[in-house]
Length: 405
Image 1 (tube, rainbow, N blue to C red):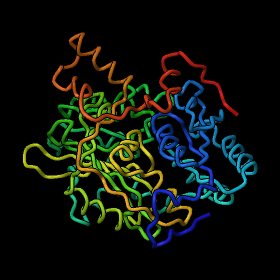
Image 2 (cartoon, helix red, strand yellow):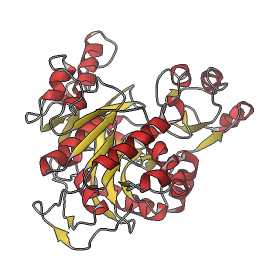
Image 3 (cartoon, rainbow, N blue to C red):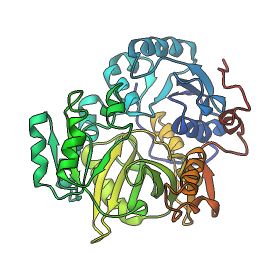
Image 4 (cartoon, rainbow, N blue to C red):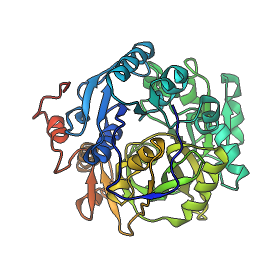
């Protein structure tokens, strides 16, 4: 099911909420979707195979235990079909992980009968998910991409000798390393910075028998603040309908991990290249484009696109741009509401991971340089919300996290 949004501008009070939202996965991303839409009156159902996720306890989300989108796809498909029959209106289906995106792509024809889906068909999504194809499109529109090679079999790892080290080794598709066995073999990390070809060869040898396909790219110098983000919603005409910008301030592992502290602030130089890239890709839906600015010469390099909600998307709402609402309006053919990012800085903090970082600092395992970032300024938290305390209480073990059916 798909519709096109109206051209007229709406207001904060004219949202029709007849269509429920079904969220796949209720961790940081799913919880933020519920908090962005639930207070507007939208019914949000959260499906996850993990009963301990704090988002399951949110007042704005109806938690349903569900099969995992990676491990039990057929069971999840049947559950979604049965759930759709319970609902009075077609629901919007929101993925929050690459596994969810892949699941929707694989079962698109069956899901389209029941759900409104703002996700490109699999063939059109391929240039977004595949880092090699994405790099080719980016270069075509004038966006810099780190020099690199794609290795598809073990005998090709020698191609990386021509690169300037240090390099970063990562999967060609973001979800590729999340398989059982492979995830452990790569050290349970999304990517790894390697200082020499011999280090790359040794690392690659440890997992290539499980999956030999990787992307190896030259490392772009800079620290966390040089990792910059353009988060947006594109409508059915592939136009950016709402957006905000941010930069990472702290992540773990450093420079190649998951964001712990992320700062929303206007970065106007990201707008034009991002619009051009999304338009050329023919993109539809929500996305996070990540860049890195080279500390040596200031040039901006494309790192990746996440074609879905991501952990820190709720930061946009704290800065004045509710991407979940913008996507809801577009998919349900409602008037676009003008949203504009405020000029002041806002920090998003993953409080549990931040506490662990402080512990590493105290033990001398991490520098104190950026450890106090989350202690002041305007902040929004991944779990804590004064109007929705249950998730943080659940994480602290002070509230039962069972389903509310």
